[in-house]
Length: 70
Image (cartoon, rainbow, N blue to C red; front, side, top):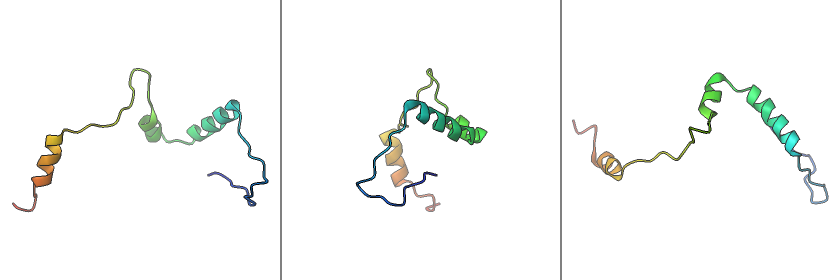
């Protein structure tokens, strides 16, 4: 949860955290993750995440398939 200032005016000076503060906050957030979340978010250098791909023929087949036509 992020705390927002109560008076959100343009006169208030913006605060940019330092890289060290960002790392510390990220570390604190990761400590609260469950093992399931940790595994789901894990990306190693040899296992890069990419957008899942599907074949157009699979989409076409699913569009015409009617499971209720029996």
